[in-house]
Amino acid sequence: MNQTPNFAEAKRKRLDGLRQYWADIKAGRRTLPRRDTLRKITTERYGYCAERRRKRLVISLEPGDIIRIREQNRRESYIARLWDVYVWLVRSAANVKQLERARQRKAAKSARLARQRQERAEKRLFKS
Image (cartoon, rainbow, N blue to C red; front, side, top):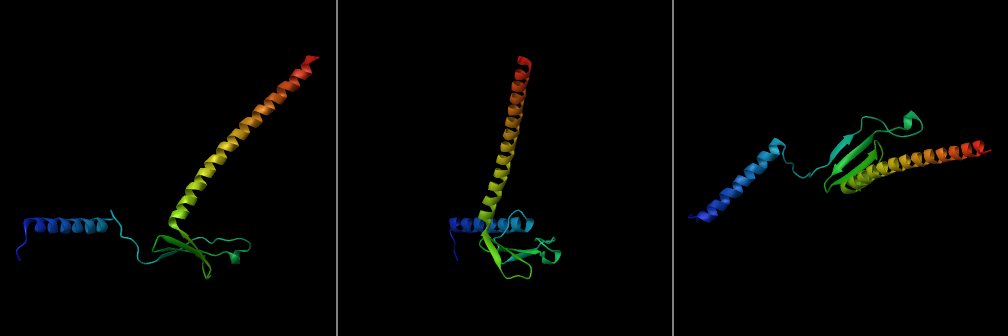
């Protein structure tokens, strides 16, 4: 088999790239896409009402970036894309910041109105 230098060079580069790819994976610098389902169970029990009704949650990370959450020993599960969960978390954090700013504005307005009320009352009291 007589190979041209260009073909041999391309083959060497491709093999070097594959070696580097697998070395990165083994070193933990890169991960492979998941093909199987990863299941974890929460350490705490969640729920309401009586203690006996509280259940652990089973969280499954499935192929296609899908997260499935269900109560332990239950069949009904809730499915969401990981992107949707991420967007919900970002929006929730933004809403928390927005509500905190609104509380600060409301407190400042309340203090300003109380101060104005006090000034008007003192003005009426000392006017006569």
